[in-house]
Image: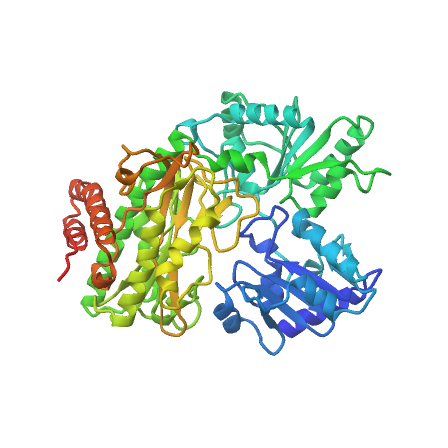
Length: 636
């Protein structure tokens, strides 16, 4: 099928008004979403590679996918390697897509892409690089992969527009009208005639609405345009359901509905209306698509396109800092989520100890059952990663429900990365456990070194405003000391009952381009790992909130403070995930006294928080299991 699909695409490339020497297929929708709906899964359809990140490039004779270290093993399993070439973009000797195109195409070549699937930040440097190489980048008006699908009798599914879910103020802490008012104040400072919001989580956040158009992400396909006097929601057929409309009115937000497909024409008309002014601009995120930038500038309707204010979205910066209601929601949903994960691990060990065969899929399904028992649970926050043995070394592993199922064995290291969407917050947790409590010395060493890195980040103190990438090396030091590493970032932002991966801040070996610097009230993951391909994987992941620290704070390093970074202020992390780490997998000889106390204090807090709840709910076997797991660790 892959060859047939490539042939259909190449025929369409050749038939364009100017034949295309290459066609670019990002993993993207029109909103720069990290996770996409099936209608937008074009790179997956053409290549067979199902990973959540990667860009395909097809020429008349080559087909390549650039992706990062999380997906190397997965790509080699899924793609037809006789047709597709993996470009390992994390490696220094791998050329960038721009460099590869400039090197392998002839001078004068035309490269095409759907401008809805590339941001302005991606489009402009690519266009500059190709122009320098005397090549052209053209915006192809219709997506060629979609056309190929139709030709082969496999058209893309319809774009979903599921029901809107109003999220009351008791969860959000701030009414939609107040958010819009604050955005208008920022617009006035920028002299912006309109603010165009294109990221789906930003629309949902602004309006205190949620949806289910993309699996695991409580968002809905939409655009939001705010002017000084009006607010327009481009969604579905433009009809805002009564329940959503009532909440918007109650929160002093006057919103007019327009059909989703009208956004480009609306922006072009807005550009025409603003053309004679010359005093104001249209404000939109640099992460908005090239197509939206062109429409907002009036590129196809004005002789001289408008200047745009294209920069990090003010909504992205607003929702980055959680308010007190959101933060308390995060803490509470992590307690409930901890109950579900503890119950699951107790059940799994019991089943395997009794000789039962449990597959990865069955384990994932059972965990979902336990989460469904918890108040305000709305669904998983991403596809559960239940990696047994060598599957744990596939960083974004996803077991198939088709064909043979992997059985979890008692001598496996089992890596479980999972999360839940709750009305009061979003969870994301990874725990790794040896299923017979008897890991090898190599596994214990790796487990402990990863844990040491997590502790070093979790207990760090740092100046307010430091960017997250500064902290990344802390997580790797214990691994680097023995020549080990991992090929992914250490932390990502997390949305409040929104996307489990939320920008613009994070902790990674590569800087986040729009990270404004860490401030109190953010929620991030802390997730170092180690992966021995073909054998096992280890990852420990907690969610943490950034908190202001003084000498009197309840923080393990607060008592040692002698300054506050010359008045900049001190930040640290408070871990909100509530699940113990496996004691038997820890090599105590690798821990210093601070680390040993840190682990014991954390386990004590987990037990004192979850134990009474389990007792109240008469889950005595789970409580007893948790008590054993949280027992103090001592040196022999």
